[in-house]
Length: 247
Picture 1 (cartoon, rainbow, N blue to C red):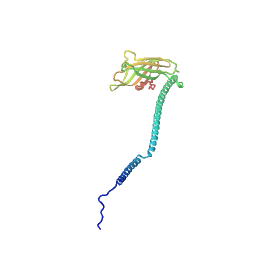
Picture 2 (picture 1 turned 120 degrees about the horizontal axis):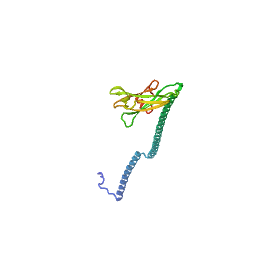
Picture 3 (picture 1 turned 30 degrees about the horizontal axis):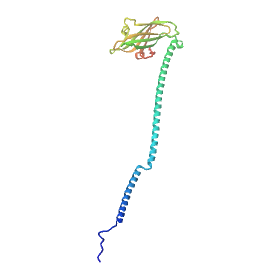
């Protein structure tokens, strides 16, 4: 008996065709849904899921801490500025007090020598020398010399004062006095007469190119020995009267 071959054509009803199409649609829909679920799971895992809420909370805390630290830095900077201003003011006050104390010590030394501590009866003394430029002139100078004697001495002392300026001119050491100090036509000697102390004022002119180094003062006392004193030029230019006069 010959074998039977499957028929070349299969006859299906409309219901069978519709059922097949439904199955194919279901399979396709399931496949698409699986892709969507896989994509959603991947995105969920990458974004961190619920941990995102935790990260936002930590971010808020970090921002709050950062703002608090900034405020602390601002407060410290303001405190540092206040401290700096206070320190400068204190330094200025201390400098003023030091200057005041220095002036009081100078006055104390002056009057101590004037009244004669220890009962000594000192004679004439060149207490201080000060030089200052004459305004409006190139080489004019004002001079103030303070003379004292012990108050216990009680005598009036009279005499005259001579001034000389030592320095360098043309690479040579020279001493200028009298007419060389522009005192031609006027007396080069400054008279004095006092019982306790006196300030003698005068002026002189230095030639151009002359570099002064020292002031020398000679006080000729009537009936007594002359007193000579010298002070460095830089010391004579100080605001306070130079009291470190070598005699």
